[in-house]
Length: 171
Image (cartoon, rainbow, N blue to C red):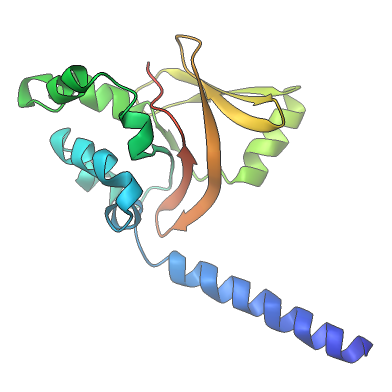
């Protein structure tokens, strides 16, 4: 019986590793583009001309807002951000969702433990985003004091990792 459990455990481990390896073959942008819940994010990345950058080698950690997070932004404001003349402002907002390096959920949890429930992350736009352990979950707190819950972690990509968040964070 112990031998059967051991063999089943090995099969499970190799299956998980193989699945992760398959997920790693796509870039962050390819994963986002193939996920309906990220269609607004992909539209914004294209408008800000950031697709090429996030298809680069990285590694990057992307806190990716769902469409429902973008829907919380006034539609007039969102449409305005997508206009070519607001490309720099949109780019600043989107790069506020990206950290250089690959930070897995375990890395963030370890940093939160060391930081007594709080850790500051420097984003690609140079601003600070704060990860906070709160209400039994991990949240991002933007510079305005607004929170976005991390809803799903460790979506592995060939050039980094995606963590799904419920809201757009603002620099």
